[in-house]
Amino acid sequence: MVDFAGLRVHIIGLGSLGTGQACARVLAARGARVEISDCKPKTELAEQLAALARLPITFHLGERAYEDIEKAELVIPSPGVPLDIPALQKARANGILVVSEIEVAYWISLCPIIAVTGTKGKTTTTTLIGRLMRAGGQPVLVGGNIGAPLVEQAHLAGPRHLLVAEVSSFQLEAIRDFRPRVAVFLNFFADHLDRHPHLRGYWEAKAKLFLNQEEEDYAILNFDDSALRAFAGRLKSRVVSFALQGPAQAEIGDGFLRLGGEPVCSLEKVRLRGSHNLYNVLAALAAVQAAGISLQSAEEVLSRFRGLENRLEEVAVIDGITFINDSQATIPQAAEMALEAMDAPTVLIAGGRPKVSDFSSLAETIARKAKALILIGEAAGAISSAARQAGVSSIYEAPDLPEAVRAAFSLARRGEIVLLSPACASFDMFANMAHRGEVFRQAVRDLETSVENGTLGPLPCGSEKEKAR
Image (cartoon, rainbow, N blue to C red; front, side, top):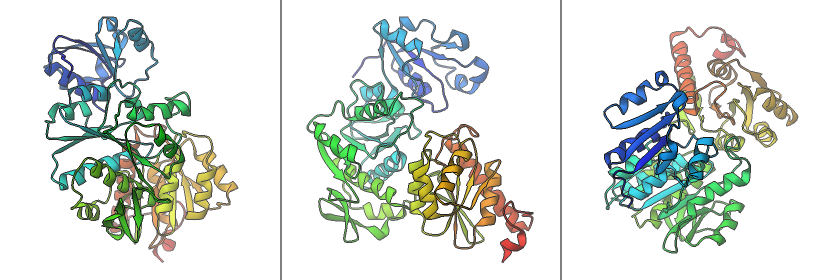
């Protein structure tokens, strides 16, 4: 346990995720002398500053950001702050410890931590672990990259709690002692190469999740991922495997989700769409069992859990057409998984700011699984070119997402699906992927109102007469 009383702490970033604010509140309450830097001017931070107004905090904003950072004893950058900025280089050169918010959460936590990482599926798995634990009678708090800063949850947790955390590569980059009792690694795909200089750097950041584990700890690994299967032999902790395609300690057999060969839940009870979500479910079950929590209520939990916003979220059914929001699909592999999960002809809406240059694999999946493709954003040309080479002929471009929704409605028929699964980042048109998901939901709501009121008007890819047949 670190004694923060009188410690001079410099926090960097007052961003929308709230980790900077949370660190400031928690550490000020523990007696630290808190200073905060943010490159934005005071006028752009009114809401954040108001939330901290009554606390004894010194602010360095705009051009004064990072002032006196060399006088700090501890520096905590928010996850969105790259670790190679000059201010952090200066701090480290002066022998100042630079750590992430999840490291501070570990220092103050009175209870064990269950941590989940991976390129995709983290939020769903983390949420599900929390629900399974509560159903098993375990007091639990859930936080981290999922939306509630982990440091705040750790501040609230008592010795009888378990703390379940979604952790990203950005958070893991700057840990020192962080040691989860149970660590889950779901999968690994190319991502965040705008932050990490190369794929190896991204992998090394993720792998830090296991850096401090000991023999009594658990590592839950996806053995269908060859990199993770190979990684298992390098760990001190007890490895628990999960897989769909090969034998594992958590697997599917004879219509049941099984742990150690024993049935836990009937497969038909699982309400989440897609094989990728079965990986998430198996990982969650393995993590809960490793933590020593009863899974007696697991089938009931899984039969009620239909997923989260922006993750294969069913938004509405209009004229028999199902609209699904998968805005979290920011890389091609995630969009491929979403398409594979669809059980009816699908009109795919994709595009945005590309994270990769190669869309060939996605294009092949589109050719097999989608009846039409509607593109938006900066990547429209690259995805269209790859799709045409793969033999996709029904390709359309829309100027914005609401128009793409109307175009998709004109192309889909009763019993079919309209799927937003962009395969790209959102920042060319939206604040973030959650904003993109909300714009999609609103566009679908507007469409539904127009259909109900008979005010639909001409559709981009078809006529009202064609739609009404």
